[in-house]
Image (cartoon, rainbow, N blue to C red; front, side):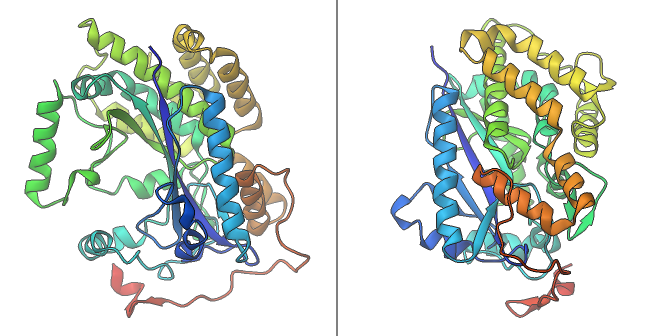
Amino acid sequence: MTVRIGVEEEFHVIDVESGELVPRADAVLGRLSRHAGAYTRELPRSVVESNSGVHDSLESLYADLSASRGRLDRAASSQGLGIAAVGTAPLARLGTVPPTEDDRYLRMTGEYRRLADEQLICGAQVHVDVPDRDTAVRAMCAVNPWLPPLLALSASSPFWLGADTGYASWRTMVWQRWPTSGPPGCFRGAEEYDRAVDELIGSGVISDAGMIYYDVRPSAHLRTLELRVCDACPRVETVVLIAALFRALVVDACATTRTGGDAGCDGRHEWLRAATWRAARSGLEGDLIDPSTRLPAPAATVVRGMLRRLRPTLEEYGDWETVRSLTEGVLAQGSAAHRLRGKAAKEDLLAAVDDVLAETRGDALRPVRGDRARRRLAPLPDRWDGRTAASAS
């Protein structure tokens, strides 16, 4: 049986001359009206989300994502804009990006205040088919321990508001402030999971099931298990790699639950949150927590261990050679966070933005602006919709 995959990617909208994050997602979406449904808005007006088709093979997924990025780039470049698939935009200022004019987003902004105001982040989500919702819920425990290595592979957000955070994925630190983020708990089936979600909604902490922001969750409207822990990835090949690994993890987990086997969870989740923090801090350039031992080990060792574990399923789906090659390439070149830091150290943050825009397009790295002197981020307004940035706290 073929298990299909799909991807949602979020992109920052960037002014290509200044390299700055700008609230012009609607301007890009306005050029994509004939692709209704494939591109949508997000909470901040600086983010566009794309939704892939449903695919059996990595090759067709890659072609779809590449074509989607191409359409986005053409829509943006015609207006002096670029799209950046990266966890956080290196150059951004708080208070300059208002929320999208949508009742739900405006309610969220009013309720969560500074938390919502600072959601200037982008992720990549992967959906994998599951037989039913019960299986999806039970499979979460089996895949949970292996999500931090997937985060490390995606890590692309070392910079926040023009400064180096010391983290490979600062997006994770911003994201985990939501009350329903992080590793999900253990549930015996869909009924128990849905009851827990209803209790959260009833508590008033969240308003709907769409605000369950766990690292992995059963989709509220599709028969899929959804990966949500990853940063947006500049290179489409990295997205395809993560999708392939997550599909293999889900296939193995579903097989285990069908046979009544141990889902691999002992009910302890404090180490999972710690492992996620470690992946966000180190990326591929330091130690990760090995899920097999719960001890630190070099990232390459942990990732290759995951590959060995998943090899039978990857071979069954014809993905082994592709995944092995992509993995070794990523380990050799380092995370996107590592590449961004290197470029910024060698030149500056604007040069790092250039590289992100080029990688997102799939181009050979080259500047996207004309000759112009590198300059500091220009002063930006500190107000939107009559509210100051300070008042949002």
